[in-house]
Image (tube, rainbow, N blue to C red):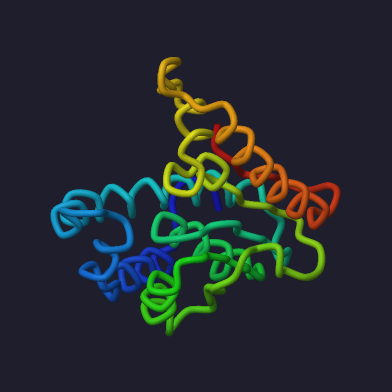
Length: 190
């Protein structure tokens, strides 16, 4: 099972990406230029997601449970590989109502359902926690993001706002980590 995705999985990924409403997603992901963004990023997003899915597939057990904190378009290939090839239960959470609606319409023929809630609502234990790009999201945590990516300007950086955002990030981590069974796997970004 190493190397590439099964033909059926590649087909499912292509179908889901083909059903996405990129006009709506353009408004979700971009302040302006959403159509151009998705014309340029759709295929690379699908390809990179598939590469990550292949790498993750080798590390996850069949039949487990995965909690996705802040899942969207980029996570689709990974979610589909888990659900289709590994028969895992996946629980993707996303706070953006319009994005969740688009994702669920596109996923109508596959066993993936996005939840429009904070992942703190997830119940039970999971052997995999996906928490990629959530803790340094530039929209939700602009000061944490600036510092995370080394772009903080010492003249304009506000340590009080950073500390306030940092407390919120800690709450997300403190609520997510206890849901992780041991042994377990955490997928995150740095």
